[in-house]
Image 1 (cartoon, rainbow over the protein chains, first blue to last red):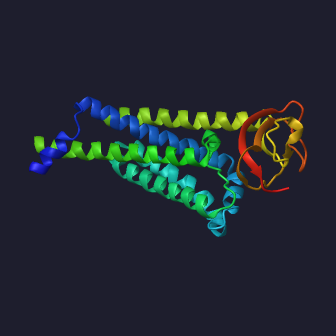
Image 2: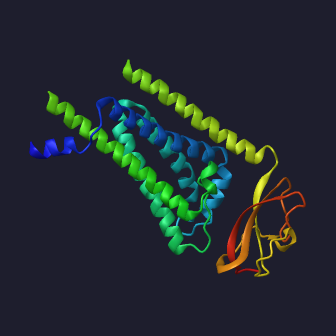
Image 3: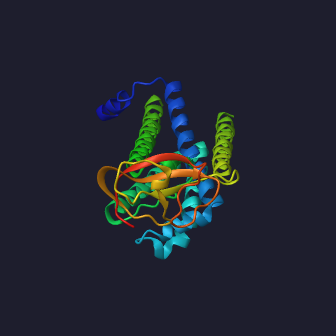
Length: 158
Length: 101
């Protein structure tokens, strides 16, 4: 009980502000994934060429080149539907962590660093890309914590 | 009702994302202008258009204050070893010493 009260007090937001924050972060995450997924599908050849240049993925480049935009779209659909938003955010965090791991491993092991991440995001340097991903991961974690604290709050009110 | 509103708003944001992405792609391809990476093999800080040559698969740079690579935007795809076009616009410069030829 005590820990429940402590967790509730950790977020000093009014209910509407909390709702708006969660919705804003959800939409931001969805925007990012749809934006990059569309670019990867429309310019698929270029995305595939980029993947084939990375040694540790080039064997499965064809599968990955379709799997990545498909996973991004699927996560976006989950984020869009309020009932599945929580799972969508989990999928978002998992995918972004995977992408960040890919960037870090490419930075360590690859001599050249191709990035075919789609759209304007390609203009970022690898370090900027890393910070960009980390910022979105942290935002999604924050939204998840807000969602979870909301459930605790509702349960407590009952 | 509230959920429906949220989904409708989400769909609008989704459409906006796809629209923005399509706009970015169209700007880069259909206008004919594209960005290409040119390398600077001379190991100097000179920044003339003719200092740079096109390499489709450029090598890395070591740390230095010299110019190593630069992105140039132009309407014609450059041939291997060509300088940026006379009307090309220079973008980001990567400092360093170019490791390739």
